[in-house]
Length: 320
Image 1 (cartoon, rainbow, N blue to C red):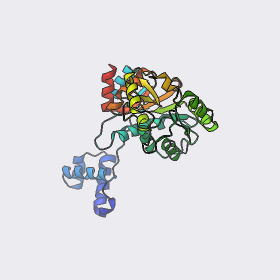
Image 2 (cartoon, rainbow, N blue to C red; image 1 turned 60 degrees about the vertical axis):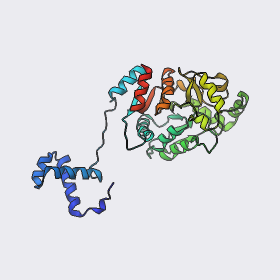
Image 3 (cartoon, rainbow, N blue to C red; image 1 turned 180 degrees about the vertical axis):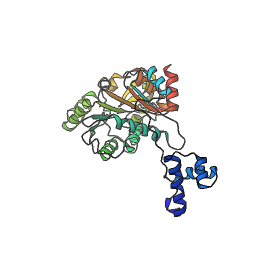
Image 4 (cartoon, helix red, strand yellow; image 1 turned 90 degrees about the vertical axis):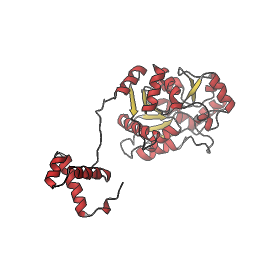
């Protein structure tokens, strides 16, 4: 954005006057040009310049229940309560584009006193990095739905997400200090019996809002990047039908647990408990996430989907 201070007073006054005549007085560009005794193309150029430096700021505010044709089609086909599709843009990353929509929706539905459960990973970290600084949710609680301590060289943002919520909203934030996947069911029970972990997981069970992502499967999956699953384990699960994970639960194409023995060693709010939460917001973008998004829909794990146009089109193709 150009710096306003480089304009002299005469030019600045002209930019403001033209903008007021066109946007506030509702004169046409022809009428503004006649009034100021200049050409219409020059007025058009001035209006464009006024937008570029922030004199004119345009904000589109759709009606509360507005939905595009694609959003309606996917919502009805998938049986979801809400679908939000960010129009594809070339000037910002896909995660930021979708993240902004997710923030707007989250901040429109959360109320003080709510408990918001969240999963970890790049997508949710991106969303929470975009949260607006507001004191509207100081009485809300945010809590991680699954364990997350892992190899710090392959960051899954297991603690930063809670911090983002706390910094932006002033909300009380909690995350269980334990791994997402352990070696045995007995070890899992030991972690869950620890007082601090137990208190955090109780909050996670009580969450009425879930903000989660649908993980891709393969080497880019967060559980793989975090070192929880070896390459051999990954391929074994793929052979069993795994398409991704939700809150560290590996699921198949129908949204069911792919491997019960593995899931019994997973430190997370059970998938069936996640399905009971009133608002289950799934945020995901990219071709690698499509199969897991469809599985989350089929399994009724989410009832709100936030994504972009390219991903939504692929989901529609799979779901038809």
